[in-house]
Length: 222
Image (tube, rainbow, N blue to C red):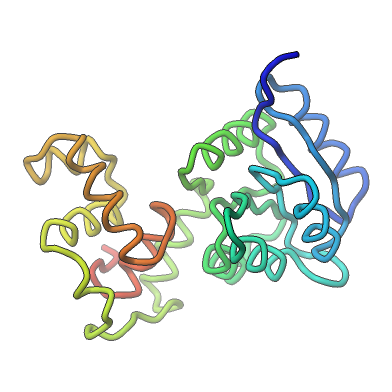
């Protein structure tokens, strides 16, 4: 018997959509669908039974919606990574999903290869946003849609000066290599700083760290 791959759970209220997503996932080496649910409440119950690594989560569903289910799933011990899938482009859903603890946000019109890549990215502990969503995220800060936290926020005091520099560069969209070049440090040191600052900020990945950086006023959109 081969090794078990990434355990994926699919949550969507439309049966055909669930079946299509499950078929795409199951066709890939190293990805295994371990369950399907049609609403948030069922998703919570099923996740407790099957222990998924990644949950593909729809937003608009009858009963408990995907945002509420995401917040509850990610609040537990050893939570799964949640990749939110939606046909809706409104900024509010992006912010709500990310603040609820989602690790990624992908539009349903993405190509199957994009979906598969996104699953692998979030399963590996990173965050995933479609380019269009990332652009709107930055634009929303630029237009004042998202308010900044006060300068006296206690999270700032937990960061070393170098960690603040790394956070600012990260929030500007730089890769680890680019951050290293800008700050004159090696990539391994950049990774170490990121690994240190994430728990200090109470976040799990780069996307949520970026949101915090804007919230704290450390970065202003150009």
